[in-house]
Length: 50
Image (tube, rainbow, N blue to C red; front, side, top):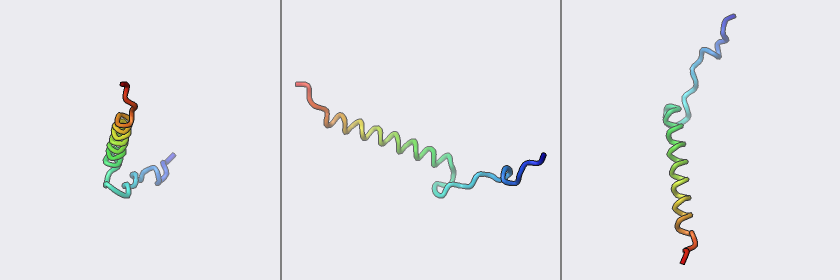
């Protein structure tokens, strides 16, 4: 049984950054920076233990 033509086509390029690996890297950098910012905000507004 022959594979369909749609199985032979490569994935479409993402609409920005040119390659999917760059998109994944950008998402990981965004998530890491968001976690860091929220952690710093938590430290800033933590009640002092005096």
